[in-house]
Length: 399
Image (cartoon, rainbow, N blue to C red; front, side, top):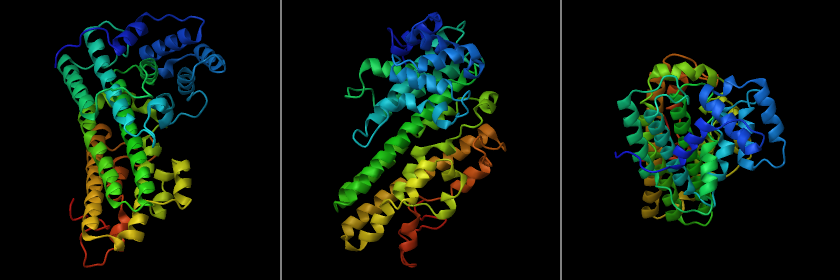
């Protein structure tokens, strides 16, 4: 990979972080608070700084991105710290994919990865920088990270023109969407990778929700295409685990305790993917997985439609070609999801060992149990016993 040239968004942001000084205006205060967070971690902000943030958040002149940034800054102080606030998902919200513009997710992931590569490059070139000084990687590890992040940003889709992606908005959102709780360098990597996955799951959920809507029209091929698109999105993001694995387990453990209360079990996007595929069994709906996402759980219990319900109602009316098309699409997504869970389990095992999860689960044991779950489990149960083309029990013949 060639060395970055010119002045990039992240390099300008890094320069402003190093040079920023507290001042009276809202933008200057936000930059100063961001500087303190990137030097010492959010948990080290003092009461005086937090009071300034509260006052500025209440100011009607404060812009929406900065206001959301302040809301995340105050999450622990106001006893509402969560996975959502840790990842600053409300700051990212203007750029997150929606059902109206699903593919903006690819653009956002690319921006996040490019920012990560630029952050690694900036700190590699400036050894005396005070930004996240603890536990910096060696030269070769940093270069490997930069190459992986840059390559993944191209796979997921290079930044392009989109109505929701005006340059100034992108720069502001990316700039204020990293709030590490510690001063450990690798927490920046950790946050960006999790934000990328949240974006991917949000994109998948929007795609599958659209598939449920399209299913009502009876266009089988369009439904299958959307299911395959969701699988492709997850597969394209598979390299994120390899990127995360450049962080030594000891580095992760150095800041993990400070993230207690924030857990991926609280991911609403991941659970939305699940309920658009099928209504989970009651035991799972009553488990910590769904009790941690009450809004999604309520939606699941409201009797909304799913792809498995559509399959149950309509599959007998399909031609052989249509049945094959749908089965192939379902298998593709199921396989992708199972691969993701197995890799997640493997990476987590190396990182946390036998420790409990930060969401109150049994950690690795919980993730192992989750590998038994299937997205389209009702479809296997509705098949005749002699039909092994879609097994909804513990095993799938194609996995």
